[in-house]
Image (cartoon, rainbow over all chains, first blue to last red; front, top):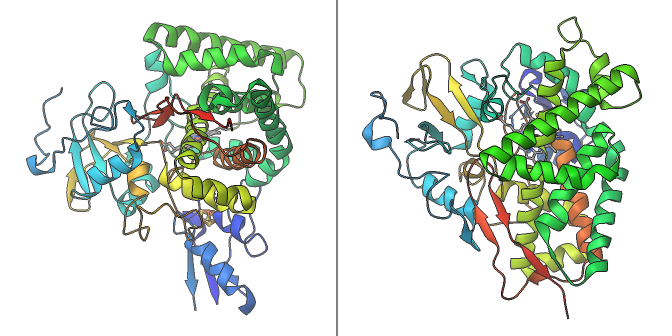
Length: 63
Length: 405
Ligand code: HEM
Ligand code: SF4
């Protein structure tokens, strides 16, 4: 599974990081770091939850 | 009341107002978020209210999460530029960054974001907790009841701001008084208090110009914006927003949360027994008891979800309504303290996303943790009646909790 990061839509709510700090990294301003994320199979559930929690819909999941 | 603009179709006009409808005016033991959501979600996605502010300005009301997201993400078509706060005290300047538009807005946010970033807030947690503990222990020492807003929620919020600015605690009660007057008093007292706070901030800036130290004001005075230093005017327009932005909002959030826990003892004992659940529960409380309605001005004719809006129209996005949109949240009326995928809009969407949201979340979570850990099972004091209300910031007052045996 892959998380597509639409960085231009991120507004720094940091919900992704709050739910899965080991999967999502934030920059100094609190925005998600650019670049899509390959998710390990054992982390898929948490990564999915985190993506679904983004109020801006800046994270989409690609199977 | 103004005349209805010609492009507003009669069938989209709603009689509901966040200021004057039943449950929006002070109501004994009300549930204003549920009432607003029920009234507005029963109608079309976008309606027009002739009464969108306290002074009766008309506005579009965007009720669905999807449309609010689109509007609040587009700061070019939907401008935040206003002078609401300064106009109320007879002046004319925008609050920074709330009333500033892109592209300047993003320069201000880049400057401020690191100060209140999620990581920075982790570092502030110890101070936040110490404040909460101090206030709650004070309450306990005085007896077996408290007025949540005046004894805890409001002084807690004011205290955190003072700490953020690096102002000694001995001025707490003075600031609580100013904050109270500024937000909850007659227009004259409001203006006087606002001038006192502005004067205080100006003095603090002068002091830090002469004697820099390692605090917020020194940082601000040192910072570069648009390749230059900030003007004294910009310093105050920004500092005062940090003050007022985190007072009523944080206090109301804590108020509504404790009001919920007093009314629903099963939820109270669940969080008491399982404090690790508070983190997720706080998000659900933010969804269910959101308090703010962001306002925007249309800068160019635009169609949203089939409705034509004209340049100059005002648009309002009540967060507590979008937060109960069934297209966004399954079973939105159910307050489920362990709800997942909770992409609520209590802190708005888009570039103006609450700058203090990470700090606010910490204050709420720590406040609830310490209150539940230190105060025994509580209820609304028999014979007393909390009053809830709507408006620009929803709230609850006279919330007297009692834990006598
Ligand atoms: C639960 C508590 C809070 C709630 C519900 C809340 C809500 C909001 C909302 C909805 C907005 C967007 C307004 C708009 O777009 O028109 C906002 C903006 C803002 N808030 Fe908060 N807020 C809270 C706490 C705080 C705190 C603690 C601070 C200060 C540390 C703060 C400072 C700000 C600032 C500076 C802005 C303007 C951001 C910008 O325009 O870019 N807020 N807040
Ligand atoms: S949840 Fe969304 S908006 Fe928030 S930091 Fe993550 S990507 Fe950005």
